[in-house]
Length: 348
Ligand SMILES: *Cc1c(COP(=O)(O)O)cnc(C)c1O
Image (tube, rainbow, N blue to C red):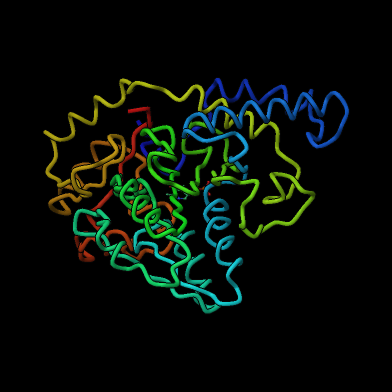
C-alpha cells in the first residue's frame, strides 16, 4: 500500500481545522475591515486566532502579522529590514543551509549591493554560534538563521544566536516553519525579534502563515505589499478569515502525542542498513537517512511503497544534490542514496 511519509513538505488539513474554517467560507464571508456586524464577527475570529498563535510563542497578539506562508514571512523579514537600509546598504548573516526562499531573497539583495555571509554548518548540520559571532561586522543589519532544518531535522541553537544578536544590537530573525508547535519556543527567552511560521506544516491550510515581529506597531520593516493598512500597514490585502481561523485552530489542536504510525519507524532501524544524518539534536519525526548501498535502497522501496522525499521537495525537480547534503559533506553518490522520511508531527 502506498503511504505518505513526507509530512515535512506538507500535512493534510485536520478534521478540526476543516470544521473550524467552514462557517467563514460561505456563511460569514464579510470583509473583516468593514464596520457592520458581520465584519466585526470576522475580525473577532481573526483576533482570537492571533491570540492563540501569540500564546504559542510567548508573544503579544499585536506582534503577529498574517502572510501567505513562511516564504512570504521570510521575504518580509529579510527584505523588510534591507529595504530600510537602501541608502547605505549593509551586511546580513544567514546560513548556507536555509530554505531556498531565504537563500534566494539574500542573493537578490546581493544584486542590490548588500553583502551576505552564508555561515556553513559542521558535518552534523549544526550551525555553530561561534561562527555566527565571528561573522558579525560593523555594518551587520540582520542575522537570519532557521530553527529546525527542513531536510535534516537538525535543531539549531537559536537561543545562542539570539543572545549574540542581542549583545550586538542586531535584529535576529528565525525561520521556524519546521519547529513551530513541534518544539517549545519563547521569543523573549530566545531573544527572537522576528519568527516565520506556516499553516500547512501543522495540519493547517496552505496559503497562510505569519511573521512574529517584536513591537510590530513601531516596526521599521518596509512592507512588501502596500495596501489598505491591514496588519499595521505591514501587509496589505483583505484578511482571509477562513485561513486565519484555520491556522489558529491548527495551533490549538496540534497533537501532543505520537501516533501508531511512528512505531513502524522504530522497526526500520533493525531491518535496513542506513545512517541517520543531522547530529544529535533532531526533530523526532524527520529522518534524513543515507542507505549503505544502492541494493539497500532497492530493498527498502520494494518493501515499502512510501512517498518520501529525496533532498527536499524544492530540489526534486532539478536532479542536483541538495545544497544541504552538499554542505554537510555528502558526495553525489551518497546524496543519491539519501532520503528524507517524515512522519506526522506532534508536540514533543
Ligand atoms: C515549508 C517551509 C518554508 C515555506 O513555507 P510556505 O508556507 O510553504 O511558504 C520555508 N521554510 C521552511 C524551513 C519550510 O520548511
